[in-house]
Length: 347
Image 1 (tube, rainbow, N blue to C red):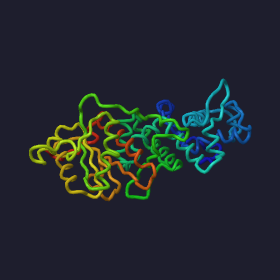
Image 2 (cartoon, one colour; image 1 turned 45 degrees about the vertical axis):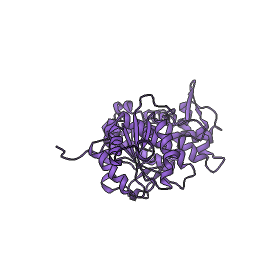
Image 3 (cartoon, rainbow, N blue to C red; image 1 turned 180 degrees about the vertical axis):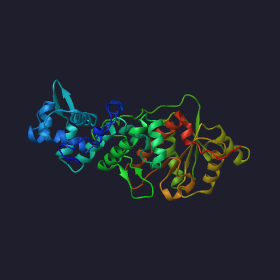
Image 4 (cartoon, one colour; image 1 turned 180 degrees about the horizontal axis):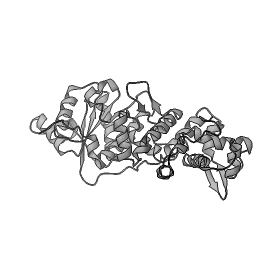
């Protein structure tokens, strides 16, 4: 069950200074490593509460030390252990992971654990359903957006990637590593930690949708895009549906792009009209959310921008895509610079 031996279990913690250990919010062990102490309590104490000293002995240690305290802390951050009085209690999540009673129990328990863990859950939620940026850009985002100290980024990335693999939340089959979208519900039926309630717009701000009009993609406007945009608090606008009137069509489109706070571009099938409108939006540096069901339909020079990739073979793809788009629109409103294509050497 564990990735480490009984005594060599620090997950890198012992090589770090005391100051770094204090600064770190994320678990200092992978989700698999953090199951070692709960598993030892289950196997050697019948799952009954144990003191930290007893738990360490069950796990192969001799006495409670800094290394073991860090491992206990990691197990708590994943929701595998909790403290009651002076004892450690094994949580139901750990029991499901260690002794699954159904086919998906272990996977669901590990997913719940990584989604609820400090920093790990926030980073997953931010990039879920997307390709991860190249490592230098990802490292900058971890420091600037999530507040992870720069000297702890390599350790965080190692723990994050290994834990995502254990929870089956990562796809490494393509050119870019992509986080799978597990949806907004955890196995316990409760919302993921950072999910937001749907809101309705009160500002009149709009989101302009650039997409093919032919079926089946044309039907996504009412099925997917409109509810997602409204969930994020904006008014959806599409050229053929909302802004056609007297005057030239291109004037209507140009006005819609200029007036929009956020834009949404469906790149599937490489529709030339969509790419023309996208070029106009990028030229005036509007924040754009990119969407595609096929990574090959995303131009190479746009792949450094965050793209929502969706899988129509997933039976829950529609609701997952609605939630993902709503999250990304909210994020783009808060930090529009992350969704803007900057023109190099612009004068």
